[in-house]
Amino acid sequence: MSALPSVRHYCCACFYTDNIFLAEYQVHVRFTDREQFTQDYNRALHDKGCRTSEQFACVLEKVQKEVQRRMKLGEESVQRRTEISLRYKPMYPALYVLQESFLAEEFLRAVRFCESPHTGLDGLLKHLHSIPGKRIYQLPVFVPEFCRDLVEELENFERSDLPKGRPNTMNNYGVLLNELGFDDTLINPLREKYLQPLASLLFSDWGGCCLDSHKAFIVKYAVHEDVDLSCHYDNAEVTLNICLGKEFTEGNLYFSDMKEVPLNERQYTDIEHTIGHGILHRGQHVHGALPIESGERWNLVIWMRASQVRNKQCPMCNNKPQLVKTLGEGDGFTYDQAGDKVDTVNVCVLN
Image 1 (cartoon, one colour):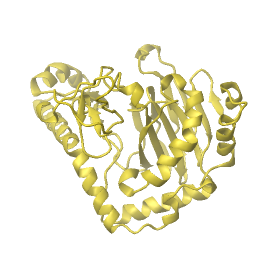
Image 2 (cartoon, rainbow, N blue to C red):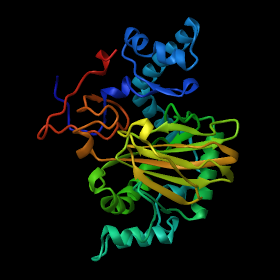
Image 3 (cartoon, rainbow, N blue to C red):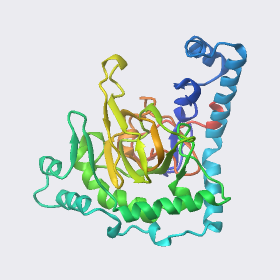
Image 4 (cartoon, rainbow, N blue to C red):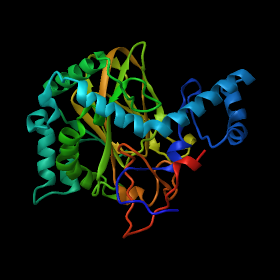
């Protein structure tokens, strides 16, 4: 395997084979070739209603298309970002640069406490709402005016004829914020200056002290569109999920346990979304979203990554990562020629 330059643009090879979501059967699958897929999933899909050879062929086609989509994802994302930067005229340009006036006073007080001489986990928990026994924390993050304006900005972009990259295979409606130009001046400073101090105390054992990259995106739920989100875990060490609005009913977020806990031993709790409030949790904590019953809900999700953690074990396949160089942002893995060696592979030989 050849040496690669020290840059951040890598994903694990499992991205091109694992965790492919089949919405009609509510299951994640793995695909390396037709023989493997048939052997592993023919019976399981049959039990979920995929009964005919035509249905199975349709599923197989969808899976293969998803693999090909992932192969082209980085290149297409760069192309979209370039076109958007040249053609899109923001409705509210000031939103793209983080200001403390965007942030709730309760959030700022919590961050200031983390940076004070008297900081400590017990004291920080007094500034947060904790879900008992779950290590899930809720607090205001943004003021309502910022949430309102950001949703209007996103709706303005949705009305344009510009290309739009959707967050993932589970969310069909939403926006990748790096493509819209929010990363460098809004999300990066939010993570580095404000979220890092919180995560360092709350999730020091999950990379919270060394978060060095992220993936930020918007998801939208609406009647007749995506109304819920199936049970899953995130490709992140720490996740922040912020409700932006608009008006909606129901649609609580629900959590069970960490992904290692067997299905029959998991216990569930749900959390009500409140506009401007964020929910902080470990990325490997299994969760989902219950159906909304009316209106629309827009959420800002930030998957925060720590290369020191994921370079040792990929959070999606639980193995030492085999790195694939990619265009675009990558998945938070790094390659250090002077430090620990990480396996690299050529994406062209994966399929």
